[in-house]
Length: 448
Ligand SMILES: Cc1ncc(COP(=O)(O)O)c(C=O)c1O
Image (cartoon, rainbow, N blue to C red):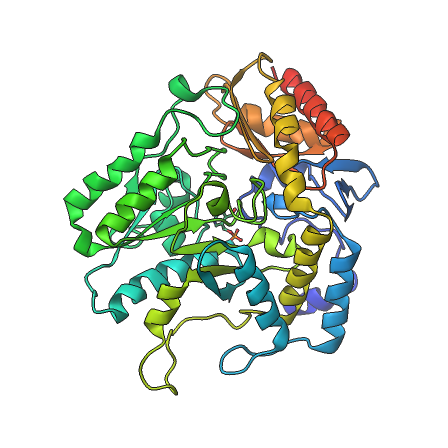
């Protein structure tokens, strides 16, 4: 049967696992033994067979308000019935302005202008492009270099992987963007192992930016981009004072500072944005995930006033920034975003995240001493647990832990390399924190 006919055929097996090429997934293992969920509510996923799985990863660091929250569901339903799509190129709809205003109000300082994208990767590419264009429109066209950090994750677009520093995300994809360079990562087990919160050691690593400036000259550097807490590489909290030092050096040389807050935004670290926790105002913040609690794809960039103002000149009929996505500020995403921000406010979820940090840190740090646990790092409602590799099978132990966690213990966790990453929704209760720690503890013993 031709493929086109087969696609229309009602005899197509409804759950054929072949066609979907899963992202960032070991496809062959998955398809042999799928980890499938069919439904979710609050802190739990449910498998197609109805088994509950506690969500210790907020989906993918995004469902900060928990799952299928009624106000968000209803807002999306209402919006879908009212306005399905509206272009935001030369036209717009009111909900996008409302959401942009609310996001700008949450951001510190004069981070006042919001550009919408549909994902974190697009948010990062947008911020990097704005940075280069900002210097360009101010007559500094030689400032084109972008500085990221080793072990950084900024999504999977070409811009993001060029400034990113995770080798497997880079090595298959050619020469990437020209002109990117990298700060060293901030992790040192010898100095930092088993730290709750920001480690004491490592602020001096920000001074490496001075070395990079000496190498390339400030006149060639557009921006530095870092995650305030490196998440996807395995949870690396910033050393005390590190981000302030980075800000100072950027100021000294006229380099823009971008915080990639795709994970840390919307109170993963107890404040609306990590910028507030660290008392540092970057020139741009990228966000995604938590803005809609994962319910509809959305991302964006929050830019300071001086960035926006730099573009607002020339004839008024001319487009100021030649950049944007068909779905920038999509009505469903905006409606979901507004309902999500209301929920965060009405349930005091940001404060809740801050209050739970100590209990969370204590519970997860309690796993210290279990077999193969080399380090545990906790910060906000985040934890990373490093396991020792099995001989000649790097990553196998964590992979088995994730798989057993799902099938045997009913807990969803994320892994990266040999690190287990835990980031529950902000609605997690103290009892559920205890349950997560118990389940993860049993899994770690099971893979010993
Ligand atoms: C810091 C950071 N930036 C960007 C991204 C990419 O976001 P997305 O997967 O929505 O493109 C992620 C995703 O985890 C992230 O953690």
